[in-house]
Amino acid sequence: MKFPEHTVEKIGGTSMSRICELRDTLILGARTGSSLYHRIFVVSAFGGITNLLLEHKKSGEPGVYALFANDDNDHGWLDALSRAGEAMARVHNGVLDNPADRALAEDFVRDRIEGARSCLFDLQRLCSYGHFRLSSQMMLVRELLSGLGEAHSAFVTTLMLQRAGVNARFIDLSGWRDDSECSLEERITGGLGTLDLGSELPIVTGYAQCREGLMREYDRGYSEVTFSTIAAYSKAKEAIIHKEFHLSSADPALVGTKAVRKLGHTNYDVADQLSNMGMEAIHPNAAKILRQSKVALRITNAFEPSDPGTLIDGRPAKIPAVEIVTGLDVVALELFEQDMVGVKGYDATVLEALRRHSVRIVSKSSNANTITHYVEASLKTVRRVVNDLERAYPSAQVSARALSIVSAIGRDLSGVQVLRRGLAAFDQAGVEVIAAHQTPRNVDVQFAVPRTSAKTAVTVLHRALFPEPGRAAKAKAA
Image (cartoon, rainbow, N blue to C red):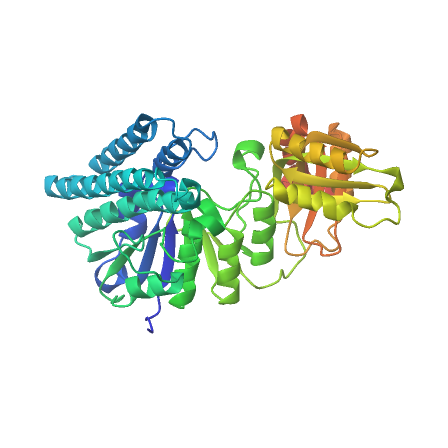
């Protein structure tokens, strides 16, 4: 189906918690008539809801899924499911003013929560016979539960906008009570196929049920994959992610709001480097979909709708420059073996051990007899890898050390002398640099520093590479 010119826009969970504010600014604003439309909104669950349904993203505190997966009795996950339903009710009662709308939302939540409860009970009973294994169904359980949050937020947002006079339409891609098996593209086609973007404002669930299994492939990055696939499928003019902050040259909380600079424009290469450093502008797989479809991405501050934000496309930089400084806590896993020189297989063994324990590699360096992987994982997990490597190479010295990587990233760093300037700035500030990496690709430079110095290192490097106008003029004169 061919759609008229439009944008596809995503609102994240933290921003969704302020949806009433976004209704009056981002979604409605000064728009009237047809200017309200020609947009597709993809929404995440309200802030905190997915944590209750799955597990807390940062602390790991178990939600319904985690309790069901490790169930000793029914009460743990049952109580957690009830708490999730109560949290949904608190959210929509704070968003919806009209009693009829609140009643519709209550019915919606009751149907979904009770449906999920019955489904999980039936699954437990089925697996009690021994011929069926609960472990083989857990990814489907995870998908079922995650879809509850997005369906709730999309439904409530639709009610709110309809009450405000907008012809909003709830598009549920979660596959609720749908026994058909389809691909992601088929699911999107079925949901969007009858839309009239000139007179309807679709509010689409960030989770889409499909045979590929979004949770299995992308875990909690699924909503951005749904969003980017919709943008590619509908040939959107632009894909827009509304966050609660601007994409800036550094974290304002570290370097100060007056020191940071909004990016304004960058490319997908930089977006990939940010993902590698744990600062996702967009999930790398979602970025790949947009890049291959030649759809530009824009990152905006949801609460400053008049600001154009940062455009991300395929264009190279006009002038070489650093665009962003960021940091990530890592563990340096080092394998030293005097007999490694000229012998193949050491690197493959390390990689296999990391894969086996699902450890993500951020960076890597090696010389004649040492291989160092900088990985994002807990020390506990890395110790398991160390044990495996010590068994494989009894004469090797294997160590793990908690560090941080501070990185300067840009579309083109050629001639900017980031490595030299960074080392000089760290030396002057008394920050120990344990290792430094620069590749011929000239898109990032990484400095490994003690974890206790990470915040200071980000500030020092940002100050060196983004001097304040007054200080820059003095340095030039000197």
